[in-house]
Amino acid sequence: MSDYKRILLAVDLFGDGGQIIERAKSMTEANNADLYLIHVNEPITAAYSGNGLGWGDQVMALESSFREESRKKLNELAGHLKVPDDRCLSLHGRGATEIHRACEEHDIDLLVMGTHGQAGLQLLLGSTANSVLHGSSCDVLTVRIRD
Image (tube, rainbow, N blue to C red; front, side):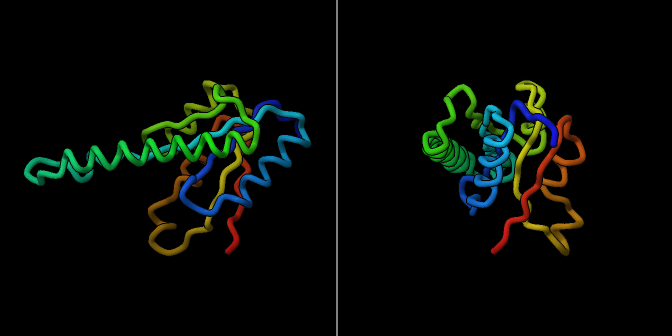
């Protein structure tokens, strides 16, 4: 097994991430590595606040609320996992892009993230896990989320 020194756990704070968290914890312990956390809030403003819709203010308020709630949940998870604040990344943007950037900026050796094993239309359109995997500068461990 490779020696991983910096492991980034990408979490969906509003889904079931227990299996992914446990896998990242075990990889961190096995490698005596530093654990980083990342959650990316995808923007909704551009899609729903176009000219003439009149929803801009409400969408921006909703987006701000999501970011605030995400940061709170990320801080709770960080406390549980004993991850320092400087290794907790709560970002806003396109998931794959922000994860790639974080991996490079923090010299990450291993990214741990979940996948649902999409099928049908979602498979054709791709997923965040697929986008991250094909553009990653580090090893990626995708954990199949079991129901």
